[in-house]
Length: 279
Image 1: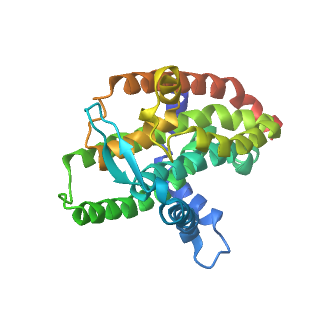
Image 2 (image 1 turned 135 degrees about the vertical axis):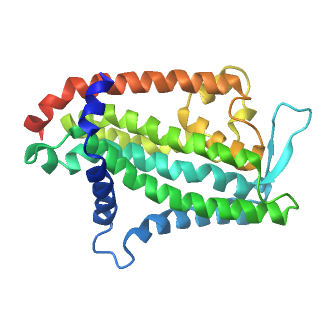
Image 3 (image 1 turned 90 degrees about the vertical axis):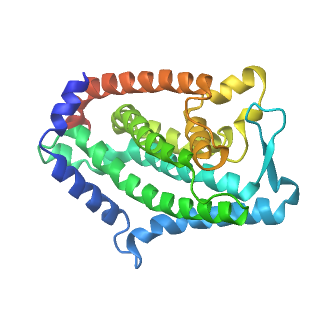
């Protein structure tokens, strides 16, 4: 039950925050610029995609975005990609590192009496700190882009980030309740997750508009929860659309969220008592 996970967190709030900070520092220990490497990698990736698609492949410079009206409007490809790829950096790290969290922090399970679920929480928070920093950079770029194109620098739709960002954190935290114990039992499962991430990227609407698909394929794309967050960030900063306007997308995601949440609780409670012996 969810109550067992909540009970494990009770009284550990300060430790979780301190450990999330230490987790971020530990990840980049020994590097001259420390945690700033967490920004260098995404920045380099964004530059590569900018060069490839904005400077290199001129035909993909602009994308038509359909919002249900008679005509699409055009957004330069780099802006479209940039807004969608920022949540992807968090999602990718959450899936890969979330699955490894228990194995890489086994000392808290085998040597110290420490609530296991809080390990997943503080490692998730360490990734959220990086995401929030990238989000500030993204928002600065969005303001610049709006001013450059003659639009007001701020929009009421921007507040939706307070909906999408925490929801994204909770969704992938709940997913790690399933993947981390399973990866602790099987390194093959952990390797499988790493192997499929590149494919998941191209199957998600990071580099293209998933709303442009028709028929069954359209609903298949909407069933990918990563699309929900990529589209959600674009709802905030590009589309000027409220999260509840596209009801089909919202309903599909909420069903998936409940399923992932319930499955995470079930798997965590089923496997956690056997973790010390396995690790």
